[in-house]
Structures are given as C-alpha cells and as structure tokens.
Length: 320
Image (tube, rainbow, N blue to C red; front, side, top):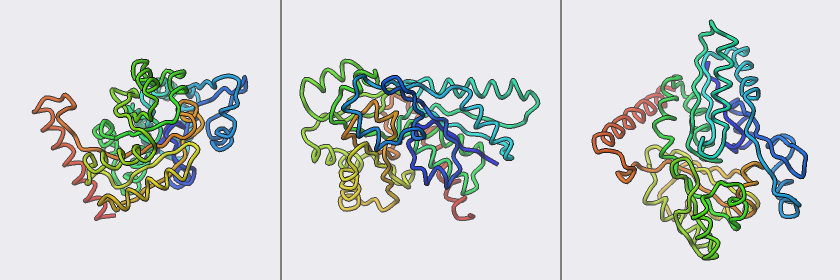
C-alpha cells in the first residue's frame, strides 16, 4: 500500500485530501504573537479578512520533523508499505529538509523496517506541489507502482508551470520569496507582475497592466506551453477573489482547445501570508524546451523517458 503525503502549502482542497487520504504536515503561522497551524487552527477566509489590519507582518515556520514522522508512523500502522512525501521547493523553505530528517528518524527507530520512503523536493510552490500531490494520488488509484509514481514526480516536477500574479509585492518582498531586483522592478513600474518558479525560487517573468491583460497572458502562454498529453487537469488558485478565478476558468474553456478538468482552489494561510490579497495563479504541465540548458543528448533521453511514462500511464488507465 502506498501513502501520499505533503506539507500544507500544497493547498489542495479538503475534499480532495479526504478523497485520496493524503497526509498533510501543517506549517505554522505566527499572527501577532499567537501561533496557528495552517488550515487547521485558522481558515483562509478568516485570515484574508484580517491580513490588512495586522500590526506586524505574520511569520511562518516549516513543519517540524515530528509532524512528518507522526504521519509516517500512522501510515505504517495502517498497513502502508511505501510512502511518498512531496514537499514545497527547498529553495523557499526548510520543509523538504525537515521531511528528510523525519525519514532518517523513522529508519533509526525502525532499523529492520522494509518500508520504503521517498521524499520529493518538488521545486514548486502552492498548487504547483499540489499538482504533483494530486496527480500522484490519481496514479496510485489507477494502480501505478511506487517506483513509477516516484519516477513521474522526479521527471515531471521541473515541468509544472507556475503563473502567479499579485496585487501588492510588499508581502513577497518582506518574506524574501522574491528576489530584490525582481521586486524593485515591479514596484517601480507600478504594474501587475507575473511570477513563475526558476531554479526553485520565485521570479518575475512578465509585467502586465491590469487584471484583464494578466489573464490574457495566462491564456496565451498556456496555448503555447501546455503539454496536452501530460496535463489532464489544471489548478487555478486564488486568495481572496474567487470571481477572478472563475473568470480565468471561463477563458480557458472558451479560448483554448483544453477540455480536461479545471480545479479552482483557495490558497492557504501560509501561502497567503507571502502573496497577499488579490493573488491569482494557474498550474499545469508545460512542454520541455531546449532553453532549459540541457545538452541535446540529455534532452532526447528525457523526452524518451517521458514518452515511456505516458505510455505506462495510458496502459494503466485502460486496464483499470
């Protein structure tokens, strides 16, 4: 039996977490001296209603190894023999390292255990890692093996495309989630920056004036970048304005050839601390490009590997 687990910044909706029995290690947030567990002790809507009136900028902390270890032990007691833990990018948090420490603790305490544990540094944020978590849960349900799910994560994690736009860069600047140079450019021009993940960290990749142009940018980029074979669902994320998320979903359905599942999910408290009100995001699998600085033979090998993975996934679907 395979157990899928993650940290709370994956921001998956509770119904999906419950449906696929996903273990969640919560990050914590300190609000005016009081510590809350992400999505447990304080809900997103409550947080977004008070964020602009807080005296101090909230701070966040990664899950302790104990939080991860608790989920691992509970999984084993429930009969799971394999565990896959998918963490937010190690470039933005110590969450991944905390999970690795928990794995080491587990084997120290269970020296003769034959349970296999794999920790994934997703190189993603928010629903980016959530995309991998959800896909892994679906692959598990389809009957894919532990090794095949691990291989999918390690192969495709660099192709999870992030687009995130915020109304105010201040939260990202204060939290250190955005480089000073990128932040400076965005603030000076007084425009809506569009960010993605580069080398495991957030970076501004485009600048648009107004929300309509931001959504148009998302659509245009999706049309040119989307890997039609690998993207069988899209995740749209939002902090405080679900109407904008619904507008983006409508534009995808009306202006592209995509006809798969589109999830709309709210970003959690920890992610919201860093992106603030009015954030809108989109996640899917993008095609590989030679601009990724891979050597030609490495690119050919990677594309062949991806083709083999997709073939196994298709065969599994037909047999399930």
